[in-house]
Image (cartoon, rainbow, N blue to C red):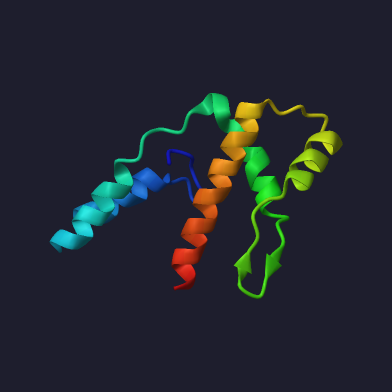
Length: 108
């Protein structure tokens, strides 16, 4: 949330500016909820990057996106010289589940 974009502004700075300009109670509440997100745990950045790479290559069906398959995780790890611990695979699964839930909400 604090990473700067190409214009030199962070998402946090943009949201704080939007909060100052927003008058509606509902709009202010939504922005405040976005700002209340806890900071990203930097020690897990490598796992987030791995998830993003895997997610970008996921397959789909006529009904939506498919979960990331174990075979894809295994191939990714082998091709990138990684060896995921069981808890790391569980985190990738959790991220994948959350991603697919949010993806489905946007389709509705």
